[in-house]
Amino acid sequence: MSNMELSEQELIRRASLQKLRDLGINPYPANEFKNNVTANQILTTFNSEIPNLQEVVFAGRLMSQRIMGKASFGELQDETGRIQIYVTRDEICPGEDKTLYNEVFKKLFDIGDIIGVKGYVFITQMGETTIHVKELVLLSKSIRPLPVVKEKEGKTFDAFTDPEQRYRQRYLDLIVNPHVKEVFLKRTKMINQMREMFNERGYIEVETPILQPIPGGAAARPFMTHHNALNIQLYLRVANELYLKRLIVGGFEGVYEFSKDFRNEGMDRTHNPEFTVMEIYVAYKDYNWMMDFTEEMIERVALALNGKTSIPVGDKEIDFKRPFKRITMFEAIREYTGFDISEMDENALRDVCQKIGVEFDNTMGKGKLIDEIFGEKCEGHYIQPTFITDYPVEMSPLCKKHRSNPELTERFELIVNGKELCNAYSELNDPIDQLDRFQEQLRLSEKGDNEAMFIDMDFVRALEYGMPPTSGMGIGIDRLTMLMTNSVSIQDVLLFPQMKPEKRAEEDPAEKYLELGIPAEWVEVLMKMGYKKVSQLKDVKPGKLFNDLCGFNKKNQLGLLNPVANDVSNWLN
Image 1: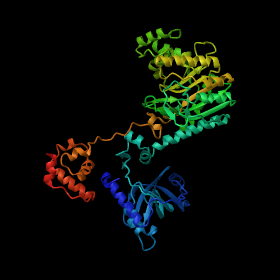
Image 2 (image 1 turned 45 degrees about the vertical axis):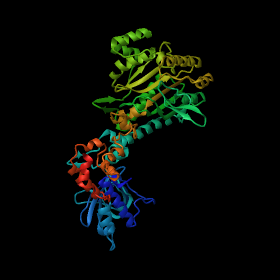
Image 3 (image 1 turned 90 degrees about the vertical axis):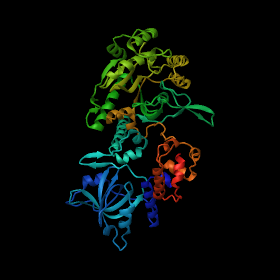
Image 4 (image 1 turned 60 degrees about the horizontal axis):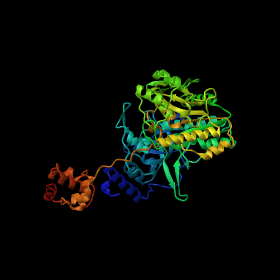
């Protein structure tokens, strides 16, 4: 990277980096730094009457400095919070050589540097818990300045809040917005609570393939890739359902997996192409049992994360206390559209869609039409946790037919805040019925439905050996985290969400500048100064551009021979 591509602050920091090396200080040491305390432990356990914490070793990022004469203050930040440090010249430089304080700490350290200190804890006259530093060492030099977030009288100024920058540079977001970390700590705690509940019941956590020859288990558009050695097309999994049910066939009676799934579909506030799902399958259970199990799991998570079952979500208060409301899909559609569609065929459903303003096309079969009606007219009304049950058989190719109505299936979805949170079945274990359902999906695919399921003949073969009655449930971990942390976007609960490619300013090729008579060595300078396109030069006054070029040359120590004023005028004319 040339100096012209660096900002003034970056140049200053690189100069400091070299000065540190000239002083014999390694700015990136390899040896272990054995810290023995965190900022939060200091702030919560220090007792000035004893006193304790008189030999602390602490490491963190330098977030502020107040440089004075022989003594200075600073703030170090670790993963638990910030702690003030007090640094005196004669304490860290007991001999004649005061370089470590006068040069290194005062002049060569920058905000963002990671440093380690040894010392003891005390309370300042202002009442602030502080580390009195006896030894100090640089652990990592920061050569790019952090955004400066200012606070005064409880108000924050110049905050790092631009969503695209925050998501694209999450590392920076976590440094300057420490509260963001709480979302991800809660996410981890939530997953641990679920895993703990499953393990208490003896269920086994397993891993299933991400690269699959057939993307089964969900109606979704897959990502495709190619395996060179085998010369075959593979898919990133859209669901792990069929592999988990193979394990039930094999004799496991309770299996679960926290999996990364991938769907080559749209992106919005609730959808990311890569997402986390927990799926669990338990033998000898049905969907009624699974509703009770799901209620218990989510209530447990809410209590563990928030200490209560009622939590704020936007401007609403959602209560996850058991039991949740239960209503069939046909009852929900009748309630919010006025139409009883339980006996309707495909043509009648198209008529209903036209009457109530639901868009559809000729590729949609009966199941897709019903799904569109429910999604457009009903789903958004269910704010409090509600189980929508008994889906039409056309919508559920992997689900067992209802025990009392063969036109329906034993399936439920949990809707919270107007969005699907989880999906569960009494699993289909009749291999002949399963093959018929797969073949119906094939017919939909031939009509143009690019989300229809593929036929997985190996899964049918597994069912032919016999799978016990089983209930399965899948829940979106990202959406559950959104609810439990009151986050409005899925990007807020993913450390590194998928982003569009970073936009770069359009630039003219160097030849266009050369055509104006501009020497090659000044083309790069002009572009660095912001003149990315020749057209930007047309309204610039020659005198101003001449002075700016000379100033930029001097400031950045480029060593170029300054242009002649008349030459600059000729470039523009």
